[in-house]
Image (cartoon, rainbow, N blue to C red; front, side, top):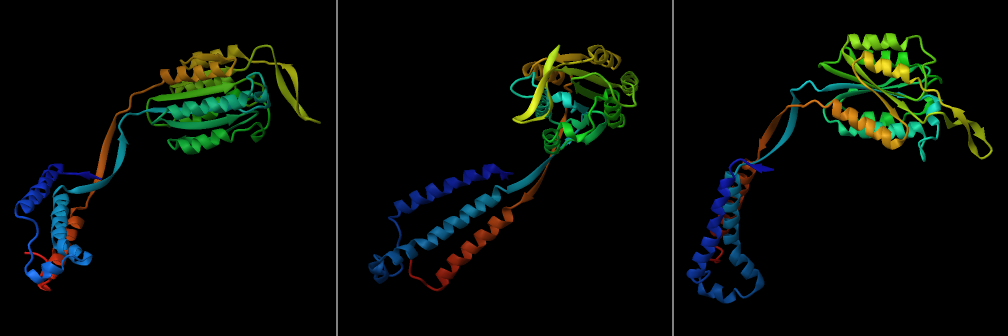
Length: 324
């Protein structure tokens, strides 16, 4: 609650001045001496001060009403274009490799992407998951709660296995090409080489560049060999050390064609740093115009003051011998 004319509270000085004035007059006076003699009882003392209290509360209510209490709901209108971002995450089985201890690649990627989303404020963001095919998990939205839940739900068994980088990029570009604004970004994260899909990655990159969509590519995982799950075993999931194949040249070409950059993340900390750098590269100032719709509440306090005065008047009319 706010007050439109808070200076009205200066009138509260009436109360200490009134108290001093009553004290100088010697306190309360009674209309009949016999009533004063019986005023020692508790109920009499309460009734004796009640009219004065009601009058004081009525004055207080009028002062609050004069201050014009208001409540309102604020809305924000974003004037700047902001950024449209498509987060493209590889969920192929190789993302379960345990070379980012103590977590696998996919879990580290999910946590890092979540932190990136939480660092944004006004940008529209889409989520595309891919393996042997690609699917839009969340279209462009500013509802980050829905986006966060979708990121947390990513798992390798959602799609047929494989790595269709070209299909994933084409899907993301299709989501962004009609997005309003001039700043459009794809962040493509993968740990493998393109081996599936009907769309060539370079063709998809050129199509993205034609729509001014910059594609930052992120290669995940260690070089050489990594422990990769090969199936269930007697004690749980069994892992085997297998050679990791990451086509860095392809990812560099995709980034270069679209005017962006390629990053390599070999551990969780490096991946976090990469997303922090991308966040800095793609920051766009946003101008916000604030509107507030207020509701006035002074009438409630005026009504309260009237009721208090009427109550005091009833006490007078009934000729309670309480005061003068």
